Length: 175
Length: 121
Image (cartoon, rainbow over the protein chains, first blue to last red):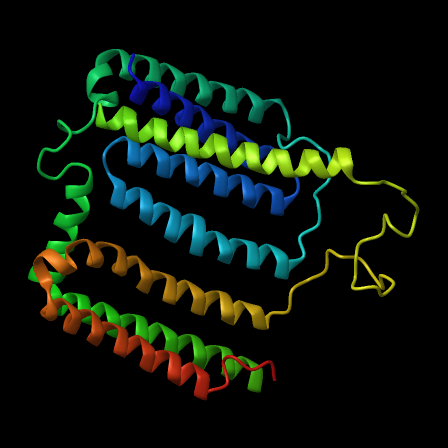
């Protein structure tokens, strides 16, 4: 077991632990921060699997922008800490959840047993085309050489979004 | 080998950051004088007495700021792949492509400014 596999296991465990923390924490702001930690673990997994662009985008878009939006929503709605009662209502839900968890676990065990190498090995040898840093370069080429016009159209789309946000926000304020 | 070197470098850096962080807190905890009283235990509000709970609702106007941040954050996403091929491949053409993209968004920023999106009232 090499260093890569050890780190994959550490971050996979971290992602799982933080995901569990998100659904079990009562305070919504703490849950949002645990979700950020979960997303950072996922980003580390992407980087370890030789997809650095996806890792960086995960941090910038999900851990950055989307989570800021979540936190804003939580802080504006003033969601109080919910009661201490169990998340499960009745024995049927507990049995159903346990059954689903067992099924998922069995699926993972048999799946990992069948495809152990494919699940953990990097996509190709380091330095091969499309792997690691070359991954970013290829996406950049596709975006800025072949798809420059589409890229400019994305700019116009974002402009439309800015204008739409302003029009909707201002209309609501004036009313 | 290169992967191990990179990861070890990252781990050493992370350990140095953690040690620095823990060291600063520990040093101030050990060396700092502590004379606690009820006034000192209150949340610090620039010398004023606290007037209410700290966990209050944010004003809905901040939502506009959040949405606009989201849009401009998406814009930054394109800059990362762009800089990787700017000098070796794109050159001046690349600058024009990105310049046009940014100009469109600066136009959006100007519109937002003019409509009063950054003003409180």
